[in-house]
Amino acid sequence: MSLSYRQPGVVLTDRHFTVPLDHADPGGETIELYAREAVASDKAGQDLPWLVYLQGGPGFGANRFVGRQAWLDRALKEFRVLLLDQRGTGRSTPATRQTLPLRGGPAAQADYLTHFRADSIVRDCEAIRPQLTGGAPWTVLGQSFGGFCTVSYLSLAPEGVHTAIITGGLPGLHAHADDVYRAAYPRIERKVTAHYARYPQDVERARRIADHLLGHDVVLPNGYRLTVEAFQSLGLMLGTGDGSHRLHHLLEDAFVRTPGGPELSDAFQEQAQALLSYASHPLYALVHESIYGQDVRPTAWAAERVRADFPQFDAAKALAGDGPVLFTGETVHPWTFDADPALRPLRETAELLAARTDWRPLYDPARLAANEVPVAAAVYHDDMYVDTAHSLGTARAIRGLRTWVTDEFEHDGLRTGAPRVLDRLLALARDEV
Image (cartoon, rainbow, N blue to C red; front, side, top):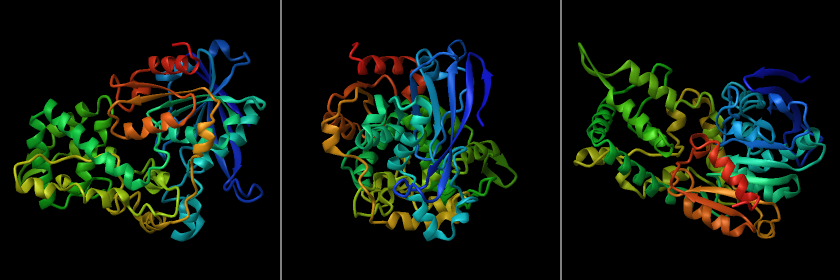
């Protein structure tokens, strides 16, 4: 049963679907998908083309907008929008420390999670599309990992796509996880250097916090172990438009004086745990590296292994000298599953996923080279999360794709630049600019 309700300027409808866990076995086990349909209040009765939004991540549910926020306002001018909670996220049969034990032990959990990559998400879209559009192709808007899914869509089922819009999400078609992180660490270092140039006072603040963590066992209120490596991972913020400023505000009030000496303040700890915890999106940590698995090579904790080639990220070595402590970015490590109480029960499951050698290809270069679907992609000039060189190589490999390369926005340009970003990309795809 579908339930409709209203927010300012929009009519929303809850949609529920049943799809196969494994689309290669359509008669086997099923899972549930949830999506929120949005249509402008003054167009609710009209026959409009559909746009399906694929969220970044992996592991995040679709945006929970209030009314016509951000890019949704532009989309609602001409589309009926489907905000899809991709499988395992949000209200779509969630995959968490609480639910995964229903599968059995770690081996069964790891096997289950192999069905939560881009190819399965595309098959989900194709399973539900005819129920909504009557069989007509729809416009696909993919942000970040959602863009990876969109390239898989163009590889696996281009007949389902009328137009493809990608923001910060053109993947390397042949890049192994090792290649991804070897390209990532120098970008991360550039972002950290830029942050310290903007806020030079943060150099000493970060050193002081790191030094404190090396000498103290700090456990955050939710049970998260705040190690120095975990503190460095707060650099994930530096890839967003306002992330440098938010990191600065976090660092400036880190310590308070107590009868026992300086301690990390409750306010700092509360903010840090909200930023570091995977409780709301554990699937991100579990399958993050597997989104780059396409052959017999295991991902094998690529971010951790490759980091060893960049000793400048070693906080202890930085503190032994007078250099800055470098933050890190979008990386998941074995210690992540020890630090976070939301992930600790899933450590063995993560190890098994990291060791897998049977990943299927996610992209079809030959089919992409013959693409006939209008495609436009925003490539952010020095995107911290997605390598620009990899993105531009893929742009050249997809026939007819038009790029907008810009340094006006960071990776979250669809949010901060809306509705102008979506407007420009739709115009590009339609060959109007």
